[in-house]
Picture 1 (cartoon, one colour):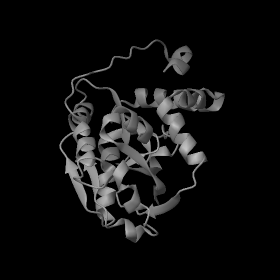
Picture 2 (cartoon, rainbow, N blue to C red; picture 1 turned 90 degrees about the vertical axis):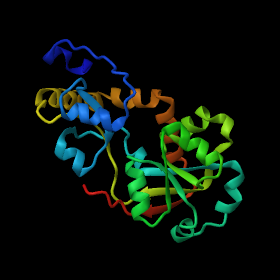
Picture 3 (cartoon, helix red, strand yellow; picture 1 turned 120 degrees about the vertical axis):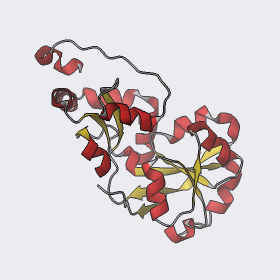
Picture 4 (tube, helix red, strand yellow; picture 1 turned 90 degrees about the horizontal axis):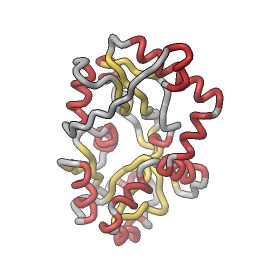
Length: 227
């Protein structure tokens, strides 16, 4: 927004902290009822109901998935040689996670948790074997839930065959805001400030480091979500 101040004028950004859940947020945005912009993974259904600002904010980090496991489980994963070998393990997911839909369609047993923090406790307790996390998420997950004995699995990454982009959404009719955000992001990409800010965010920098220094096996899984 700052990049477009000279052409579009001043702006106000206010964070709405109602803790009503991601589906309520999306419904409010669709109804133009209190939320003007949010971000999330892009699917055909969401793009039909909302206007997508078509710039991938995560620079493909979400397209690669690290496995978050309990530290005692690593010996079991050491035996994995193929994607089919992975299917003996169960995956955890939130109810509305795009990743959960993809894992289920690829033949994984998916165990759903009622809330975000509870998923990590379930993993620690052995309710399922791993959480598939974007490269930008896994380091902060481990730090946030440091008392649960969770680690990144050391041999494997998953990769969607069709990228899952993370973009801003605005209300379908709010063309002016969508246009301003897209122009601002394009300017930031061109002048280098997008990448500069990206690398200043610890979780994104950590994910980029994993990708650039990867020596793990990469198993591709089919992204069956309707785009």
